[in-house]
Amino acid sequence: MTDLTDLGIGAIRDGLAAREFSARELTDAYLEAMEATRALNAYVAETPERARAAADESDKRLAAGEARALEGVPIGVKDLFCTEGVHTQAASSILDAFRPTYESTVTANLWADGAVMLGKLNMDEFAMGSSNETSCYGPVVNPWRSADSNADLVPGGSSGGSAAAVAARLCAAAIGTDTGGSIRQPAAFTGTVGIKPTYGRCSRWGIVAFASSLDQAGPITRDVLDAAIMLKSMASVDPADTTSVDRPVPNYEAALERGVKGLRIGIPKEYRMDGMPAAIETVWQQGEAWLREAGATIEEITLPHTQYALPAYYIVAPAEASSNLARYDGVRYGLRAGDGDVTEMYEATRSAGFGKEVKRRVLIGTYVLSAGYYDAYYLRAQRVRALIKRDFDIVFDAGIDAILTPATPTAAFAVASMATASPIEMYLNDIFTVTANMSGHPGIAVPAALTDDGLPLGLQLIGKPFDEEMLFRVGRVLEDAAGHFTPKRWWS
Ligand code: GLN
Image (cartoon, rainbow, N blue to C red):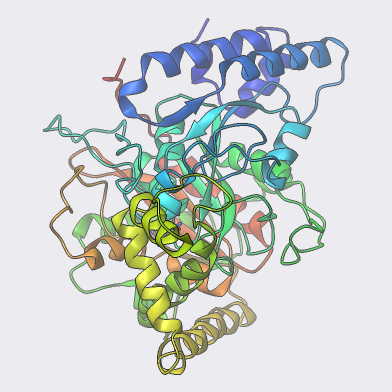
């Protein structure tokens, strides 16, 4: 029999239904793989007892003919989702020993559909980063290695643990969050599929907040089918999050085989950046060719405010973060430091508990929101945001069905290689992804090619609000053309 950890969700569903293996055997196979693969540092907490109990429950359901949509599917959860009674630290020392007393809506939806939690996954601290190097648990190692070197590469971030775990077969699928690119960029760096749905598609309740007007949850999976299955279970309207939207969640799987014949695909000319590596240009053109061959029309489009998206993001996101992170003061949760008065406790706790990147964001955010600067920075950034959204609206109103872009400006880079660079170098990772966060549109990253060094590259599709079906449908055509990408096993 094939290794059970090689099966995606679709194959798990079939195998469990046909009694080829049990949910318990499947979960045990993953727990074993996790134990053997700690060197990647993907998990920050493992929950084997809970996983085995859930798997046994799934086996009972399967025997009784009462299987739910994700019955027995072992998944990993980014450390940003509150899981009741279970380690939840957003990879920050300031949440030291925090155990939430409640469950996030997205994870509650997954458990209600029968998914099995294997543990919590590493990430950048408070989801701030593009390489998983800001985590208080240390970096995650990408299971992919360059053909000519054994150097450790980053898996991207902030959902780096999620992406690495999926690529290394340490869970059948994982969940992450995306504020500026944190699902799509790590998916592209690891040869996996990642979708950031439309803002409001998934509830944000119980997700540790970074920038509330940008944050969205989504899956990272091995293929487009698995992403469609996962999102169906994750999405819901939720009275606890007033920005979640009351629209029926479609059966995404049903959209997968519709093909692209007659669709109009936009290629935004502003995404063709100066100094873009040839490999990125090549994969982008390859994507165009695949869609054209499958019957779509390719059209150049213009999104004129694209160049302002990243600078505006780095005002809006830190502004909201500085406000959201004000609650970590040593009083209510996690770490408490200092032995003086209350002000001294706040200062000592925040100095000791937050890492360097988080402090930088809090400082920037506080600055751009301060009296005298608010209009010059924050208000202007919000206006830019409206213009970016309008760019997309104009293109989609004119009949474009989806927009094709590269997912990232480079392939995965070496751990620590950016340590001495300006933070802006790191921020540039999200140049192609932040636009969809600023506007709220859905975006998917699908693996498309390998570089000459053997590292995965992704393509991104951006769609109309709440038209995730289109992204799965077009993404599936790209996937069929590109094939699947699996790293060579060196880690266990
Ligand atoms: N890399 C971006 C940042 O550091 C986006 C992170 C995210 O999407 N959570 O803010």
